[in-house]
Length: 188
Length: 188
DNA sequence: TCGAACTTTCGGAAAGTTCCGAAATTATCG
DNA sequence: CGATAATTTCGGAACTTTCCGAAAGTTCGA
Image (cartoon, rainbow over all chains, first blue to last red; front, top):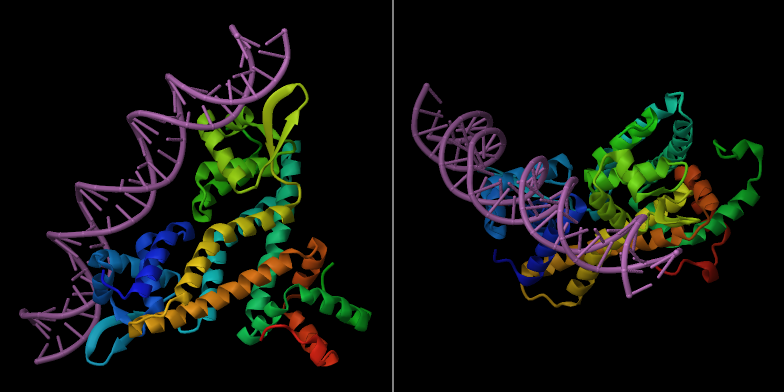
């Protein structure tokens, strides 16, 4: 691997972090490289740059595709596939959040939904079910809110985030102004 | 393992998910058990309930402690340690978010900060650094906002989340009302 | 301070993951 | 329809993680 120094540091760091992110070192390195690369790269170039075997890179790219984190493109008069990360870092963030949700929370949510339909006989299971309901409600609230917010324009989202906890003020204020039954929030 | 059926399903599910969450099966099962258990459990009881070795449970509990996800308690006249999950599922959620941030994003943020102080010589590194800045700014914005919001009361937070994307409206509204230099947001 | 009750650490077997090179497969061009 | 370039799959070696039982360490009452 002979990359310019900053790029190298970035790539190696992502490789190390890979395990914590639930992807492996190779996949982390590949994505880091694509992310900072000024132009799309083909598989061979990735092997070259990172000192990985061709097959390993192939599998790594498939993995990244399954995360919807890479874009494919072609160069005229060249039938190799070229890979790149999306330009917009917010798009990457959103995809990551969506995929993580799909893999890490949806299965649990559906398991909880099923469990809540049962009528437990054992008293311990009755308590367990109450706990599951608490967890279920929290997850629904958080993920539902997340997908709402994800539909906002990046600019709106940025503005919202920069407000931080000052939203609270606005919220209270808004409440007072439109304290009319017709405009009340749906649930609760 | 002979747990009542609902509890059993919950425990097994968390075990399976464990790998996706970055903890292992055993740790997932232990936490699931503590979460639904009507009272604190000692290590021996956990072994018993889940059919795990004593040492394995010991390590698993240490792991959960390092995540700050378990509470320790004692029974009068019994010097074994009793473990439980916090009552409040929001507290669990917050701890999880904080720890994940600490482990999964802070190291990257600090690596990026360092990288942004350099003056890259290679042109590819100059591009790389621009990309790193984009990533850095996004992470700072998101995590900063997160820690702001985390300081809100759970009730306020719930209200905020139930509003979903309607916040946008309130935001625009608030903007119009207090369109005075003195109250402008700090950054932009 | 001794010993019983707990807890943790250690060493290694079993299981799982990563990653390579070779072989097989697929796609594209003449 | 081959020939050839590109990609994917396969089999197995190297490495890592998980998890047990045994040994060592800690804590606390008598």
